[in-house]
Image (tube, rainbow, N blue to C red):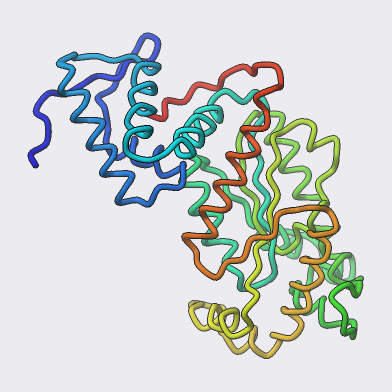
Length: 307
């Protein structure tokens, strides 16, 4: 089917831009739709605009049309998620997403994918923070940051998932101080942020910082040991698989520790056996959190045109 010849300008306040299928597809994918389906619906919306024969449409009018198309082509749950996605533009407090998990569970990949769907441009890895601390502080002055998280987990023997890991917790607290400073600045600036890393111990976000943002916490896991091992073989560059596989038991033990903490503090635990499904659960967690804000006082919008 040929593309509509007429171009529709989407007007937001005093300026307008041509309707973009690519931008609309990105917005629709935030509801959990797959990329192909999102683009298909974006084309359908474009045809509906052409059928109207109008050269311009306001942002509110376009949103109403999108919800009409979603109600016809999908279901009410998709419409609800789209509405919640739109609320992200109206949050006075910044959205802060914290994705924890041990080494090799896919945190970096999913954090990047989630940030793209949410339109967030700042993604911080706690391993990068640890590397910066290592560069500034000697091992004698700050020994906790001079070994990897799984090396810290391996320093104490134990068998149960609830065993304490003091060396790892010391490292997590040290890195966590820097993470808190970054989140505090994001709150001051009103800037949304995704933070990922093993040092995000579930339930560790300071209550005062939590009150200043819309916080979403999740712990990624890979329950199948063979699948978890397979993740390391896909790594390239300067991260040889043997180093991780030699410490695999410590890595699994660290996952048990984090999972126990997450369940104790009622933090969402998301199995990453399939990246698309895990991403869908992360998106659902974000949108559900935003949806729970509906009974709170209205918030000042932050300008962003998702259309």
